[in-house]
Length: 354
Image (cartoon, rainbow, N blue to C red; front, side, top):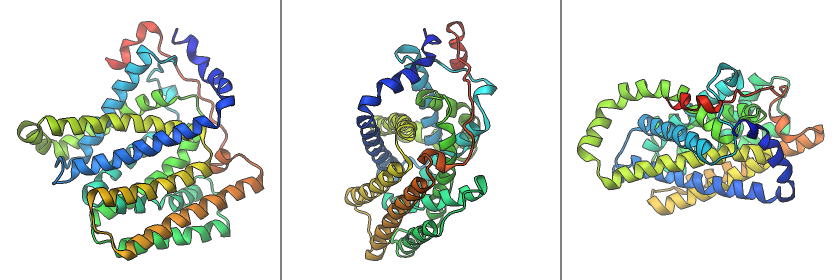
């Protein structure tokens, strides 16, 4: 029955046309709520006054393992989609690159939250349009940025510089991790445009991210954090602390699904503008929730950055319309990869989980 359902995505896409306006709204709403919950929850988990679990590598490892288990269980129990095999054919270069960038983005983002407030972290993440443009110069050199696009990036970079210079909770390792996360996310968005053209659904994509991620994260987490994590669970962990870590894993699973979903159903402009609105909301909520100090200059820098990101999105949208191409195709000038996923038959369902 799983194999027969392989054609379901195209049928569901046709059936969803009458409600195509509602689907992006639901996807973006889920992404908004889950993204905000994720950064707030992880910040509280890392804080000494919170759960005091300062282990970003271990937390990312737990996120990946939970995502794999829940995705596989969902497909095997109630989802009408095929369970794809971990075959080499299902790991084309686009997906392999995306997985590496996806995991690096999470690790760097969690590391940044270990050192700096959520508000500052979100301001640094607003460098993503600059990162996307920078990556496209190397990945798609034929797509040279226009003067208008470059001009729109000036307030983005300037705003981040002002916010960073006057940030009262500035921390060098946190700043480096935050900027690194933004650069990696730019590359992730570029490769995400390729990956979303494949036949990989969000649940199987979540499954496929886990094995290579765990191969890297397990030895790295043991080497860097192993002894301290062992002591935490042996001596400090209680029901409350374990519950918060488990909640973080569950929210991370849902957030990853929502992100893959959003990339499939919204345009580049919608994603960009929605991301800017998300940054504003998270900054204000985090300042109110955690009561972290925020200078006037840092607040002004954040506003300038978000305004620049919005301008950048509008400029990019006009450029795409002028060229007469689809927004998603304008992100990266590549041919659509042909990926025929290998489906796991009923007899071999136990293989991946074994």
